[in-house]
Image 1 (spheres, rainbow, N blue to C red):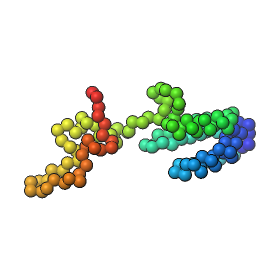
Image 2: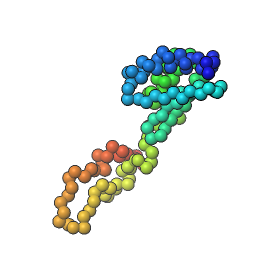
Image 3: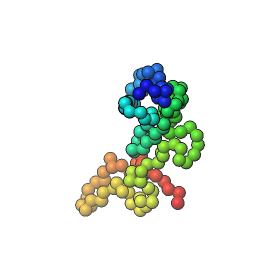
Image 4: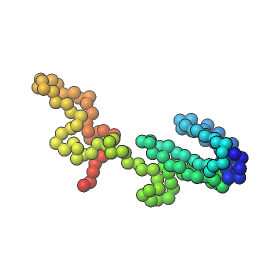
Length: 135
């Protein structure tokens, strides 16, 4: 609908979105257009199925651009626990140091004692999702 409520978003799509798409070819942009009267939203999807959604009704094209920039840096400019997108990995993806006390989870012990150690096996401490817990 070409109503005043979504006029700023439509101007943003015509003016700024082609420039953003040209400078960021690795980012996927989707436009979902409806012909019913509803509030326009900007919806950001992040890694590990995390998302943020912001209503942009009655906003100017520059305000919509500011919201898109805000989502690009992780959800919100302002400090606070619940404002930005959570940067911590989901629990199933983390490897805690308390889980590896006394043994390395990636080391496979062969029942044949004469087998050589596999030097290409990753270590838990070098794993990208290894988390050192303070408590």
